[in-house]
View 1 (cartoon, rainbow, N blue to C red):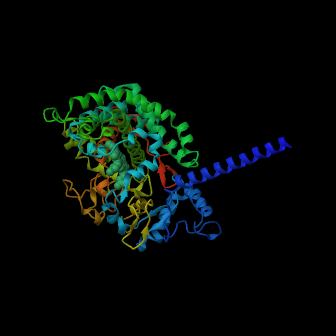
View 2: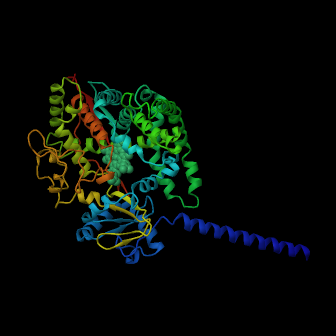
View 3: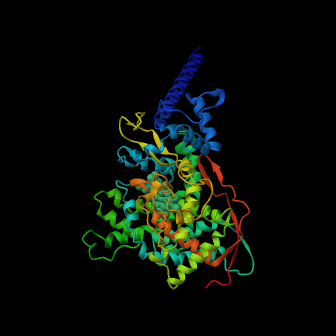
Length: 540
Ligand code: HEM
């Protein structure tokens, strides 16, 4: 009897413990998913799901997020035609973050980019999309995002020589010097290493940028981060810390290797660049020097932490190389595929690069790069038509109580908002023959897009050339407004130098068809594209 009673009291205790665990898990889950805000009163795209229902309940929302994996870009295009043209926002699912996004119409671009950070936050968005709190936690331990200021302050004219040297050494190494045999190269893999070379040269300078242990840790971190971020965001909230701990072990190791190399440099910089020293010191050249100089001015210990600064530099390396690599893969493929390949675009770019290089005695400078108008246009056109993400200029509403859009729609705090970037870039009402890659569209056509008049720079021929780095409401590859990509000037220099070098020194077998990119959610990325290349004999 006594035994039975104690057995039943153990069972009761187990039940109570289980109930407490379930309740705790439920509370944790509710709190952890609270950021996934679903605003009310906005139409969803896709409009037709199973049983023709909008994603109005959890089950149909899960379906929508799953369908986004295959059709994310189509959803944005569908919503653009159906709602954006009527100046209305629409809601799309996301397989990557599982947070719906309110896509605002073009008529609200100005409103979006003019909102202060206390209303719409780009940082919250970046941190969530790349799961930076798990993938690069120390990089976000700061009170002020002065890395943007540091990038803006880079004196690129003093870095052109260094960048050109890395372009030459990197491409020679990865594409080879064989002038007899054609070789097959994977653009993504080879260009990643070239871009890591250039970026580390700009970020940390020599000799560290030539240290193999350091650069291979940087490359591994860059290659490994995105996929891990996606897997972490797919994990159930409850298991996420555990999954993230497991998946980020290598990222932490690579971060540690990089930190070991960077911390002594950061500390040395900070030692020598106290505010009182700064007037007498030569201007900083690398991003590490810029960042350290801004860090010592901060009154917050967090901002001056050397490990956090080195992690921030590594995270920036990821942002810089990852985006530039997509731009470069698409740029190269667009240039050597029809219609550009049948129009002799590559030969035109070669002629321009050789002419400009000869005019400047083979020495690249800010002025010389500024004369590569056709290369500039070919790259901008590729970013227009082959934008690697269909939605962009994304922000999270951080204002307590939410915001009211210019159309009167209320969006609660925590809602993610963005713009239909790809549909705008491919809208025939904005760009003539919008679905065709027209390499010299921005070089020759002064009426390319009326809204782009702002910030336009004229080419010597007065052709109304619109520069790669110009952002506008109709060209959003670098975002637009206050948070437009601060690294686009660096990117423009490196991409133009790379295309010029390739055009001058390599033949590329034209492709018969533009190879398809890999598409998932609203992403469209290079799909291990390969090229047949051969070193030219004639080039000096
Ligand atoms: C072709 C190459 C690149 C592309 C297409 C690109 C694109 C973008 C885009 C679309 C944004 C978001 C803008 C917005 O939401 O308004 C952005 C932000 C940013 N980019 Fe780039 N980027 C490129 C290269 C770089 C490079 C080389 C660097 C660093 C040197 C860099 C650093 C950043 C930073 C720090 C931000 C955040 C800006 C902020 O918080 O205000 N990017 N970039």
